[in-house]
Image 1 (cartoon, each protein chain N blue to C red):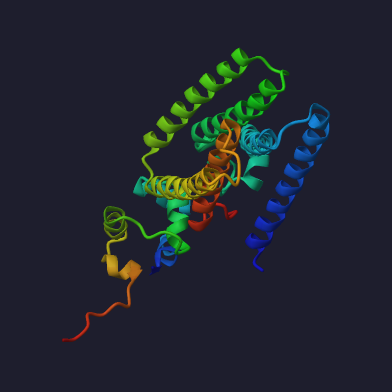
Image 2 (spheres, rainbow over the protein chains, first blue to last red; image 1 turned 180 degrees about the vertical axis):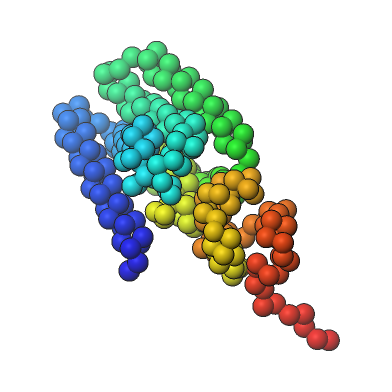
Length: 205
Length: 69
């Protein structure tokens, strides 16, 4: 195994353990509230988004640390890519917060108006992040975005259509709004990671 | 597609970041091309050839041969 591959495996393992620990903690805290399974799915995906967003945010704010786990050559690159990294991190964190807030609203622990404000903020952050990426006009970024969108669409449509067909024949309940949201959100995340990984954009430099 | 971009870049003592700036792309794009994870667009391949004063076929290696009728 090469040094870079080992570093990727170690970073992934640390990230997975951290994510699992946070998810487990959140689960134990919310167990008393009898969260339904679709709520747990949204919560899990929301924590993943929030964790990834915060990791990129910390890496961008502290370039010395960021060069270790962001796909950059050195600290200078973290500073050069600051606008793109910050907009992406803010966008990802806000989506995570929106997903978590939906579960909290369903449990009566957060106001619906607060969740709507978060949704509006995440839409605004998404538009800013989209504009930053378009402004750079980098061909690899465009290819990864197209691959990610295609992967996310294929995966989510397959799951949603199959589920709907099985529900049509009465074997399961139709997908709830929360389950639909969780499905699309996790497919977008997996599509992005899969596309970036295929193009070598997850390998440390 | 196999290519000699890394060798040619290093022969010119350029870093990935410096080459990326000269080509107007991100360093990740240069890295992805060098590691055969991404085949560049025709305009970018032509820009690379122009920058290194060589033909595209000297950078990118394609073993394809037309079949004889």
